[in-house]
Image 1 (cartoon, rainbow, N blue to C red):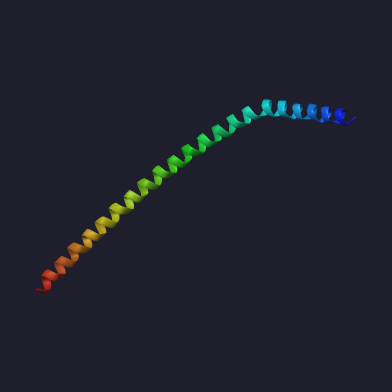
Image 2 (tube, helix red, strand yellow):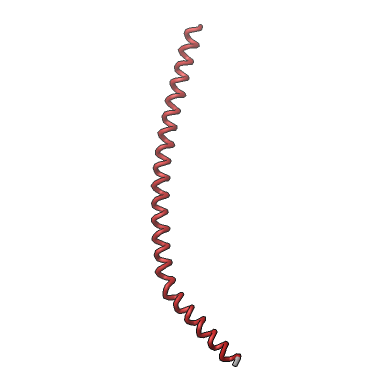
Length: 79
């Protein structure tokens, strides 16, 4: 009797494994596609942020240069 139960359990496990082997590859492929899509989104966001950072840096550099020029002019006026 215990052998029958073991055999029955083994057959159930085999069925589970077979089903998993059939179902898993498409799920993995779908996840891979989703991951690839997310990677592209992240790359796009990264590129936009990098461009924005460069714009802000350029603006700050201009403002710093303008402030320097203004300070130099004021210093020259006081001399």
